[in-house]
Image (cartoon, rainbow, N blue to C red; front, side, top):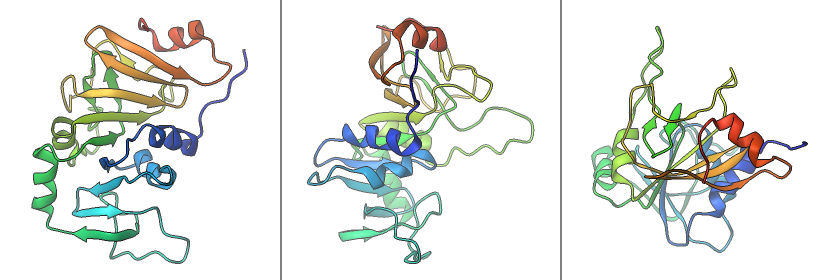
Length: 212
């Protein structure tokens, strides 16, 4: 069996492929920010940042960074024509009020039924970093997760039940990983696709959960 994991950019492109025309999308801190660089041409997708930006473009070219224009992860961004800045409180009103079509978040664990744990591992000395994740996970119309399938120790981040503190219950609809794409349902995980060369039985063994 020979297969290649999706690179971070390939994974971002896979997520971007599924974002529909006209969607208002929040990209979480970390890997999800890469999605902005892979949005399909000709498709209008409006990017929102919780620190108060609507209409972000791709990352600026090297040397063209403006550190007065940053996203929630303090990375420099660009602003498309028609883009806007606004108060942090207005940004959270958008998130909590159901005005975000899709949010893409990272995660430590996701359960088969869509519970999300992405703000703390509970480890001693770790700094909890919930940010606006709870507001997004419950306020967005769809919550997607983008992450590596396995931890550095080789354990699956897809679990029957989350053992880390929860961000939201049954809120995740899709999970995009470096090896496969899944949907969460009340009946468990549904396999959408996987990288070429990877066999279903091997993927099942890594995940350790039934795959429909």
